[in-house]
Image: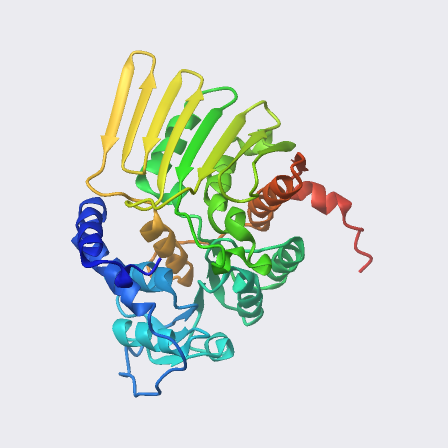
Amino acid sequence: MDYTRAPFIFRARKVGRYARLYGPRRTLAKVRGQYHMRAKGPARGRRLSPGRSDAHVGLIGCGNFAFSHIAYFLERNVGAVIRGAMDIEGARAESIARRYGAHFATDDARRVIEDPAIDLVYVASNHASHAEYAIQALAAGKKVHIEKPHVVDDEQLTRLCAAMQQSGGSVRLGFNRPESGLGLEVQRLLEGQPGAVMLNWFVAGHAIAPDHWYYRPEEGGRILGNLCHWTDFSLRMIDPAARYPITVNPTRADKADSDIAVSYVFGDGSIAAITFSAKGHAFEGVREHLELHRGDLLLSLEDFKELRAHVRESRRRVRLRYRDHGQEAAILRSYAMSGRTGDKERGADVAYVWDTAQLFLRTREALESEEPRTVQPFSAELERRPASTG
């Protein structure tokens, strides 16, 4: 929805509500991002300011998320480090370049990927192009942050994992919720309890128009565009040694990627259920609620703002001033791959990149076919491949 064209009273209430949910600075960035999205067409070719001499980050895809999250959090924490901004709508690349002090804007990804001064690339373009740009950047020796979903089909996944194995670059994925403060606390509390896990997500997203680009066949739909957040987090909450095989059980009516439910049975008997509803406008953004039980732990997480945990007679409640979905932490951990912060961030391993994608790809298949699917780990894929004769 283009909120800049909504009635004034709606926009005013939306801004006021977001200021209470996210704070005034992030709300201002979100508002600017809405107006930024109205920039269309080629870049106007006006001269840009030189920018910082040590700017070294490339940005491929200059939509709302890139403007109000990636560029915003980089500038807020490490300064004007974006050297080049690229978007097929050149005007959007120029809009970000001007707002965040980049050296150049372009509609040609090669200019970013082949720039020797750029060592880290954030890929936030349309979904079908994520893996393609990442593979090119890896071949050029860059470190790469890939926004979700990192692939839209099995062929892309195979090629991306091969590129990771052949390249000296590193990859991190934009699954941010597990890196939020409350997401980390959920995982810490889980580790203190034995046995299988029972978890249940209820997610209320936005209804989107039938002609929205998410629904283009090549883009992967809302399972890959939205639900992958919760398939990934659910996977991370199950002990790696006990995950497989995973059985995916779909429940749907007339649509395969909205107003659906899906459950997962893991190798150790853990069960996860995700319900995704998109029947109307969610005024406060995506609403999500988690209920979890493991051992003596009963846990409830509301919109990544409030967590309640009970372990026998003890109780723990954490309530944040503002929602934190972990975008800032995820973006900055990816920036640490550049080695310029003093932190050592090596990026994700190939097995994780494969496993989390297999889960959302098989989930889409299950919902489209209305039949269960089974997911096996990356180790099973290695066993299936023919032995090298080199």
